Image (tube, rainbow, N blue to C red; front, side, top):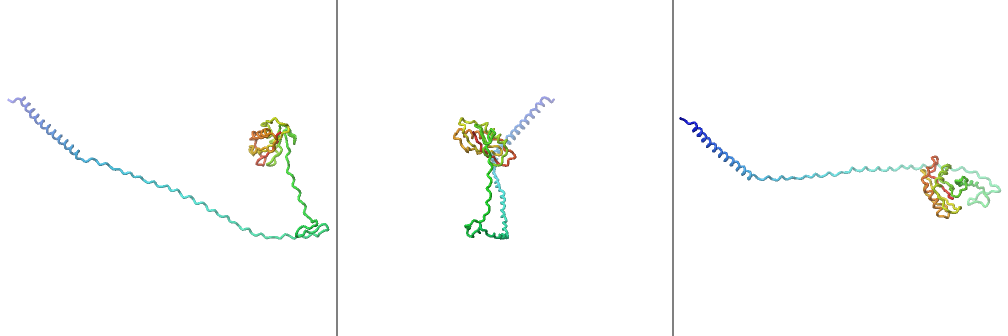
Length: 243
């Protein structure tokens, strides 16, 4: 009679012996493969370093454009003047000598009185501008006031402008305590825009404080109103008297 238990045990014993052999063979193959991998890694040459080459491009020099040639000067054409025909002056008929006159000598005047051309009339004297004070009377300037004694630069008929100029300068003039006979003349120029320039004392009073006070009043009044539009001069020169 066959024992099933004995059969199972025998089958397990045969299966266990075959599995042990397979494990041994597998371990041997793995060990052999690992050894070959280690040997191959040791025998492989190390990687060579890669050499690099730096290439630097040269910069192209900038070439400036050629400067344009300057234009050649063209010499002006000079035309020679044409000779003008010379017309001789008409001969003047000789006047017969009289008993009071004698002909002029070719080498000089005769000792007798000759006939001469009449002398031209003398030129008329330039118009003078009378002194005007703030008191309003021509030629009279009150003590402590100012007056225009002369103008230069052109015809200036604008009396209202002169009165305004004297008023503006007079408000800035502080008269020093000197005698009533002190008088000084200050010259200055008024430009078209009203600026005062070239201030200088033309006639001194004998008192330095009096002269400096008059000069300072003119300087502090600048700028004055612009010159009238109808005035054709480039500037107005003023001789202003202080008393």
